[in-house]
Image 1 (cartoon, rainbow over the protein chains, first blue to last red):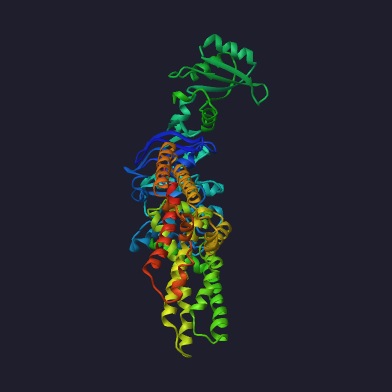
Image 2 (image 1 turned 45 degrees about the vertical axis):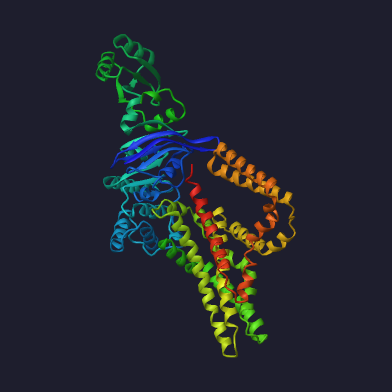
Length: 316
Length: 287
């Protein structure tokens, strides 16, 4: 559906985007994840044909965005980081105008606008002036705008910034629903959002893709079989008991928040599960286990380790 | 083009600029109508129009200052330029909307000559001619305004820029008269223009080799012409500047003379600035 080949964008000597390559299949929900200034917005502006790349190609549904911009743009709905709304228009007027510029037929128009307004939950305010709407509602009008004309691809730049928690959850549901009919690309610097919504994540830093995969795959890839155990007892004795009986790749201990207990972190080879053995070992030595969990690293940590030049990047 | 045109027309009448323009324009017409025709007991309505034309440098920015700058400020240009509309369509839609509003104002003034007709013979040819020139002149000013508005996202800068541009075009006859006409000055001027054009070319394409080659070829041709046939350079500065003198062409209309060349001049002047506008927008999409 979307093909991006060796895309580069220079602003003077600075490279906002540096040799970006990816392709997105129809029906996918893909998240661009990256810190501020990573090139997410620039990439989106190029993909929607708002600005040109310095080199490289973007193909939307097989159509080159530079060679045949009008045809390619007909396949795209775009919600930029600031919703592109006219403050002095009423919501329904505005959506009508958008339907007009996207060439929606007159007889389908009313039904489509009503349908879109229902989906983003603004049905009750068609006559409100957009400048009087709150940030969250303006964002929804912006999203409604992107959905009009049933474009094959919907591109959203940070769709949930400025929304309250309830609205964020609603917005996520809307996005998930969109994924049933459309190919969706969204950008974010918030990890939970991306992992809650997206089928696939592209982590971008300094204009380059540093990692890509499903959210689970990404969080799995970094720390396989890390185990975090909280045990009651003297740390040195626990450790010696463990190292005598088990072979573990790396072990570390530090005092836990609970008094008289100790937190132990283990790392082991990939395809083995040592939890049972740890349990029996501790039981034999009369060290009660208060807690045991596998340490699945959060996307935050992946993100930080990747964007700050962590060492585990290449493997993923 | 049509959706943008409709939207612009609606904006003119839901926001102030449309009303301000019409009120200001009709007030000026009214003042001069009273002074020239009513108090002066004179049937020459064309004098009213040629007086009002001097105030175009204040009038026209009202019409055009927000046309693109406001879109850029509100970021709604992202909606327009990522929509399936062509850039030319968007620019023309906005241009024709401004032109329509201007023509609405002009249409209202047509009442006045009809009133005057009750009191005596009117110089019909001159009045009709002046009306045509008036509309063409307005069209050229609107095109300049649209072009300047696309260069900035600040309405005030767009307004002041448009004022200055139209004002300078009024003065350009005087400026041209004081320019040197010697061939050597003209040659230097041509070289300067070549340099300016190639640097614009480089700026938009970022291809230094192509810009240098084009520039060198142009300089060689200019130099060759200078040595073999330097009469071409005679008064070239004045001729170039006079091309921008949209005001001097207007005077023949007031005498009731319709020249195809004058009409074609105004239309091509407007078309040139529309073309520039489209290119400024398209430039973002160039490599």
